Every structure is written in C-alpha cells, then in structure tokens.
Length: 161
Image (cartoon, rainbow, N blue to C red; front, side):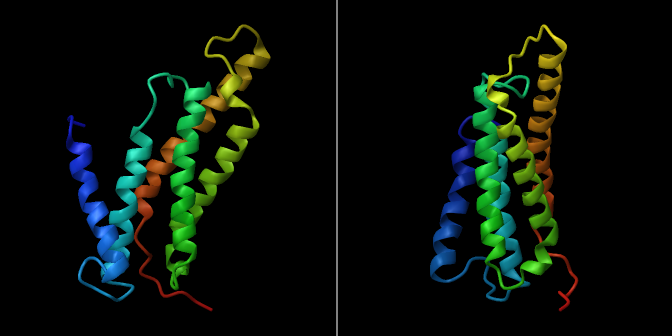
C-alpha cells in the first residue's frame, strides 16, 4: 500500500457509516439491495486494515506482537459477527457467521496455548511442537480473516423455517 492511501480508503467508510445511521447508504433501503453491499463495504476495509496491521515484531506467528495482531483481527471479526447476528435476515449470512465462528475458535485456542510465550527459536521437541501449533493457528486466523472478506454478501437462497 502506498503511503497516504489508507486514509483515503477510510474516508468513504466514515462517510458511509455516518450516512447509514441517518438515512441509509448506497441509495437503497431494502435488505437485498444496498443493505448487503453496505455490509461488504463497511467490513471489507476494516478486516483488510486489521490483517495488514501486522507489527514488525511479528514474524513467525508467536510472541506478544503476533498475539496482539491476532487479538486485533479477532476483535474486528467479533464485531462483524455481532452486527450480522442482529440482522433480520442473518440466516442468509451463514458463510459470514461460520467464518467468524472459526476465527473465534482458533483465537481461543491460540490464546489458551499461550502463544505469546513461545520463542521463535526452539531447542527441544516440545517447544518445537508448540511453535508449530501456534504458528499454524496464527496463520489460520489471518488467512480465515482474509477469506472472510469474500463471504460478506448474503446467499441468494431464501432462509427456510
């Protein structure tokens, strides 16, 4: 990303966020028209920003810098999940909800494994295994968040029930 482009990308989100709270953004008030695109516009950039905000100290998926990054990505996806859960047509967002649930589960395991304390250089089999596990969980969290960006639109199917 070129210097200065992040702020320009953020301005439409801020404007759209303000307009959404007052009149609706995208020129459509129905849930299938502008509504679904609003969700995508709002969250695609937020997820991307969180994923791309990887600290310099995070290189191998372990350590406090990587845990902080994973926590930030998890926090964004949790906010997305809460917003989708509140939608009247949330059943159409099954892929989004499944993605956020998977990230939540992987983050819980990552945090519970105390991956912030795992060194990048290992000297024994147990530490090496923990490094591999934590590094894999970190990669899964970040990759899943990136994949989630492709699942922000509702399915075309009508919910049953």
